Length: 371
Image (cartoon, rainbow, N blue to C red; front, side):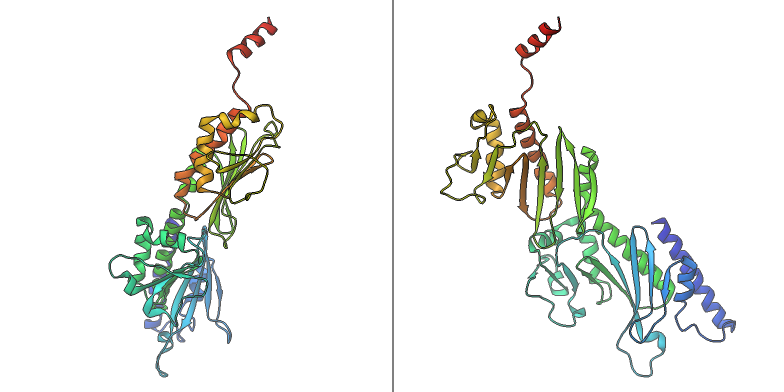
C-alpha cells in the first residue's frame, strides 16, 4: 500500500504541474493524451496511445497485481470538449476466484439483461441492495455465500456509490472513474487495488491459516488456492479441481506400508449387486484385502464413527490403492475450518489401525533382544 501512496502523490504533483504549465502558456499545445503518457513514463508503466481499433491505455504493475487502465467512450454531445468524451475504466484481475461466473453491477449500468443461461440470480436480502445491484453466478452455492459474508460486504457495498459502469466481472474488479485527470485516475486506481487486495485476502483467509498452522505450502491453481504438505507421513493435497464443478477435493496418499489392496467406497461409487460387504451402518463398501489387520477394521468403533460421518455426507468419497479422496460441493474457504481436522483425524485413525503403536510386550521383547 505504501507504493500506491507514492504513485498517488506523484500523479497529483504531475497533474498540478502540467495544469500550471498550461495556464502559464509554457505548453502551447494541450497534451492529447491527458498527460497519461507523462505519468506512465514517470512511473515506469506501459503506455499505448489510442488507435482506430483500441482506446488509449496504461498497463501498471502494482505488486502483486497487473492493472489495466483504459480511456473509454461515453455518451456526449457532438461539440463536447475532448476531455468530456471519455471516462476511465480501471481493471484489476483478482488473484483468486470468489465464485465461478460471479457478476455484480449497479442495475442502472447494465446494457441489457445480464442473466446468462448457465447462471443463477443471487439475492443480497438486506436493505435495498437488490433494487440497486444485480448479482448472478454460475456457482450459486458459493456466490450466495460471498454475498452473505460480513467480510465481503464492505467492498460489495461500494458498488452502490461507484459510477454505474463499475462491476465485479468474473475474476476482474472493474472500477470506473468519470475523470481523465491522472490525479483522479491514480486515486481511483489506489482504491481499486486496495479493494481487490481485500477480496483476495478474504478469499484465502482459511487456506492461509492452515498453511501456517500445519507448515504446508499454499499455491494458486485455476485461480483458486491449493494446499499441499505432509501430516504424519501422509501426503496431503487440498484443491479446487476446476471452474466447472463447485467442489473442494481432499487427497491423502498414505505411505507404502499402508495396505494398497484395502478398498473403501461411498454409496455413490458402487451400486447394489457387488459382492462386497458394507460397514459403518451400510454407508461404506468395504474390500478387506490381505493385510492381517484389515479383518478387524469393522470392529474399530472410533474409526467407523469417522467413516460413517464423512462418507454419509460425502458419498463420493473413496480409499483406493492407498489414496483417500473426499470431495464435496462448494468452494467456501470456511469449509476448511469445519472439515479439515475431521479429515486429518480419519487419516490418523487409519494409520494407527494398520501401524499400531508398540505394546508393552513388544517393547520388552526388543529390550530383551538388546540385552
